[in-house]
Structures are given as structure tokens and as C-alpha cells.
Amino acid sequence: MIDILALVYIMIFIPLFCGGALAICKIINIKIPSYGSFIISLAGSAITFLISILLFDYTITYQGYTLENNYPICIIQNIPLYFGIYADNLSAIFVFFLTIMFFVANIFSYRYLLQNRQGFERFYIYLNFLQFSLLCFFISSNLIQSVAFLMILSLIEYLFANFYFQKPLSQENSKKVLEINIFADFIILIVSIAFLYFSTLVPDTINVPTMGYNNINSLGLYSFASLNPIIFAIICVLFITGSIIKSAQFPFLSKVYLTSGAPNPAFTVIISPVMLGLGVFLLLRLYPLLNLTPVVFEILKIIGIITALLGALVASKENNMKNVCAWTAVSQIGIAVFALGFKMYGASIFYLLCSGFGVALISCTLDTISYSTGSQENIKFLGGLREKLPLAAVAFLVGSVSLSGFIFSGFYSRATILGNLFAAGNFAYIILVLLCSFLTAFYLFRAYFRIFEGDYRGTIEPKMVSRAMNFAIIILFISCVFFGFLFNNYAGSIFTLLGYNKIASTNPFLNVFAFIVSAAGYYLAYNIYFTKRLRSLRTRALRRLAAQHFYIDSFLEFIFRDLILLIAKILAFFEKYILNCIYAIPPTTTRLISYLTLKSEIKNTNSQFFAIIIWICLIMLLTCLLYFKTGVIK
Image (cartoon, rainbow, N blue to C red; front, side):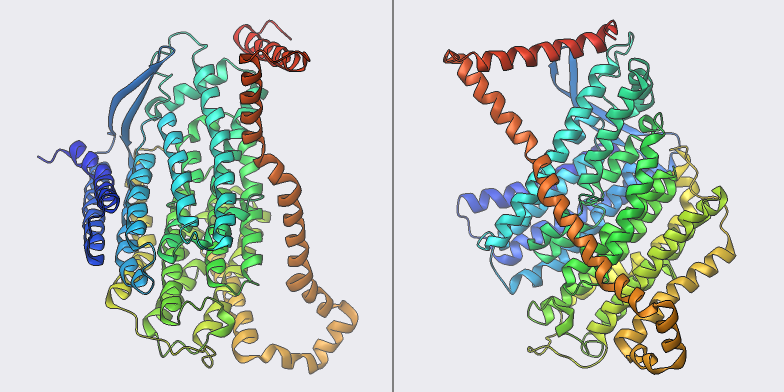
């Protein structure tokens, strides 16, 4: 019989072994051929992919069982900390998606990196360490371990964002990415410590201080029992704040395009649910705990739908291919967060993974176009590539159709959310979701018509794409087409262990109407960017009548130009004057504490200023501890 536990540990440490071997060879100057690094990394990702299939099959076959194992690391104040694995259906399906993405990234990267040998070995070292950290995060058995690997992932994301470190823009953007991630990690760490501390205030909680996911219900109840409901709600709000920052949700949208300096294959991994969905995965993992505070779900609804709409609006005006992919990913993850705000646990996972395959397929397709056209990433200077790159055109079309909700995986996932909203009678939110579908169809087919139709406007003749890159696209193509169907039919088995329903009964009339709305987005893009017929309508009497009496021209101009510029100015102001101040809080606090400690050690406090500050901080700390510990101070 297969020892699945041993296989899971092998799956986790294979990427660490591959990355460590490549790093050691680079440090001691052992020359490895370029294909050697590729083969080592590809073999490791292939083995982890096969083991992830066995793990997923195990969690589906043996319903009611979870795979858990813990090794003690250290004990701090009688609280043991563990390194362990906790494999249930949730972690197994994310690990399965993760290993597919890294297998595709390894296949795709070789030819792409050969055109520019800068950092070839370094890329595969980073990629393997990233896969190891993500595996440890998704199979973490406790919250403390998850936070630790979140911090490691922040560092690796910084390394990828600063991969081309000779470029000043990459250096500047990577520093901002690191600051944003550190701020989010700092918030999540503080909240985790708060949950750990308050859960120990209730007697007989010997198993809870490990923050294990196997007793997350008990952790939430013990913490809730030992706290004022308002304080508990504040802690939960802080937790979702850190999570939405990690997932680049409103108002922290700038994170996603700051990573565009990473190599294209790594950027595809970063904007997929593998990296951009880390915060959403944390929310899913701690769902029973957050369920004790309904206000957090109201916040998630608002943040999710605002992010989805803003991402779609910005993508409608973007001409850079990477930015189109980035805003597409942000918008789709916003819908998943929105679904979680309505407590659609299974629907949120379903939509997140289905849209993830669509985004990855479009991103890889655009990467092949960049490779073929000499790193041309502005869609205004492309066109006519349907005949030159037929597979890329078909793949992009399939990804666009899926994300727009016409057919394939995107249809099933969108029908899931709309069915739940209709069953609950949330018709206002149904309109907003349909508006997102309309905008998604519009900007994706806008990009399709500009890239693949018309005449080629580039200066370099497109070259042929390698078979390996096409093979990677075919894997994502198949996943994007069939994943939604398979997940929709076997979701009952997938979510039995988790105890959450996936979907209410769908409404066929609503699905037909959603199809028509997406078709309207396609038709608008077709008229503006392919046939140019919309301009000829300006001479018609009906158009003149509407312009004279209903100001339709002014309204359309406001929607497609002035509104987006206004939103951009508001977000720029928010980032410049508010977010930058927030990001500066952790390093400034650390410097202040270090400075005060140093002054106290050398006894240079003659002005009494530093002594007064220290005493005020101590008094505030003791007051808080007395309040939470005894509750006697009102």
C-alpha cells in the first residue's frame, strides 16, 4: 500500500532539493548546461505534479479523513510551535492547481529564457524555492506556519520583481512590492498572535495554542468567548485587511502591476491564484473563525465587487499586455472575494480556480506573442497575428470566451455565483456581476481584435514558437475547457469533507440573460475595434436625436474617458498620501523602538524625553493586558 504521508513530504521537499542543488552549483561555480537546469527543475515539478494527483485522489476517495502530521520545532512560553502538514480537500485541490502551474511554467520558460540568457540559472533557483514555499503554505497545519511562509513568499516575490535589477524601474517597483507585502504580513502576524493569546485565556485549551487548522472551530469559539464582540470583530477586520492586501484588492490595487518587471513565465504564476490568491486561501482556511463576525462578510462583498468593477474598467483602456493580464486577474479574484462575502464557500473556490486557468491561458498566450514579436507588449503595434500564430489565437479566444462566461469553465463558475445570488434574492448584486461580465467580454475581445485581426503593425517579423511553449499552452487549454465541467459534476465529493454546499439550483433564464449580456460586450468590442461601424452611426437620425435630447455622447465620453481618469486620480492620491504613510508604520515603529532601547542602554536620557515615552508605552501595554486578562477596567 502506498504511504501517502511519505509521498506528501517527498512532494514538499523535492523543489527545495532541486533549488538547493542549483544554488550550490552556482555558488561553487560548477558549470551546468542551460538544458541541465531546465531538466532538473522540470523533473522535480513533474514528480510533484504526479504526487499531487495521488493526494487529491486520496482526499476524494477516503471521505471523512484528513492527512495530518506535526513535528515540534520549539516551545515559547509553554506554547509549542510545529512544522506540519494538514491535507484536506481544500489544500489538495489548491496543491493540484499549483503543481499544474509550475509544471507549465517550467516547460514554457526554457525557450523563452534562451532568447535572453540573463539570470537563466537564477530563474530556476527562484522558481523551485517559490514552489517549495507555496507547497508548505498550502499544506500548513497551523496558522503560525502559514504566516512564516507568507513572509518567505514576500521575499521571493521581491526577488522576481527585481529579477532584471539593472533596470531602475524594476528596482523601484520591487521595493514597493516588498513594502506592501511586509505591511500585510505584519498585520496578519499581529492578528495571529492576538488569536493565539486570547485563545489561552479560556481554561482547558491545551490543543488550541498550536493554532492548528484541525480545531479551528474551537479556536474561534475560545477567542470569541474571552473577548468583547467588538474587539473580536476588530481583530477579524484586521485579518481580512492583511488578506486583501496580499490579494491586491481595493484599495491596494497597485501591488499587481508593480510585479510586471518579473520574467513573463514567473509573472504568469504571480498573477494566478497561486500567488495572488494567497490572501483568499487564508480567508477560506479561517472561514469558521470569521463566521462568528458577520460584519467581515459585508466588507468582503463591497471590496470584492468594487475590485472587480475597477479592474475591468482599467483593463478596458490598457494597451500593455502584462497590465491587461494583471487587471484581469485582479478583477476575477475580486469576484471570488465577493462570492466569499455571501458565504458561498464552494462557489468562491470554484470561481477562483476556473478563472485561474483562464487567466493563466491568456497570460501564456500573450507571453508567446511577446516572444514571437521581439518583446513587443503594446497591443496597438500588433495585429494580424491570427494567421501567423494560429494556436495562440485559438488559445486566447478560448480563454476570453471562458472568462466572459459564454461556455467552458467560466460558464459553470459564473452560473454558480448567479444561481446563489438569485436564490437569495440579491438582484442588485446580480446586476453588478452581469456588468462585470459585460466589461470582461468587452476588454478581452478588444485585446483579441487588436492583436489577432487586421494588418500586422509591428516592425519585426514574427518568428515561430517552439513546440515546448505550444505544449504548455495546450495543457492550460485543456484545463480551461474541461476543469469547470469536471469540478461542477464532482463538487459533491470534493466538498463533503468540508461540510459546505457548493451551489443552489441554477436558473436557466438567468444564464441565458447572462449570455446575452456578455454577447453585448463582445458586440461592442467588435464594432469599435474590428468593423469600425460604431463611428458611422454618428450620422444617423436616431443617434443625433439621442445626442441632442439625452446627451448620450457626453455620457459615453464620461464613462469611457473621464470616469476612468477620475478613478485613476483618486487612487493615485490615495496611494501617495495615505498608503505610503501606512506602509511606513512598521519600519518607523521598529526604528523608534531600537533607538529608544539604544538610548536607554547607554544611559543617555538626560532630557527625560525618552524616559517619558517608555513609561507611557509601558502603562498603555499594562492597561491593555489588565483589560483583556481580567476585564476589570471599564
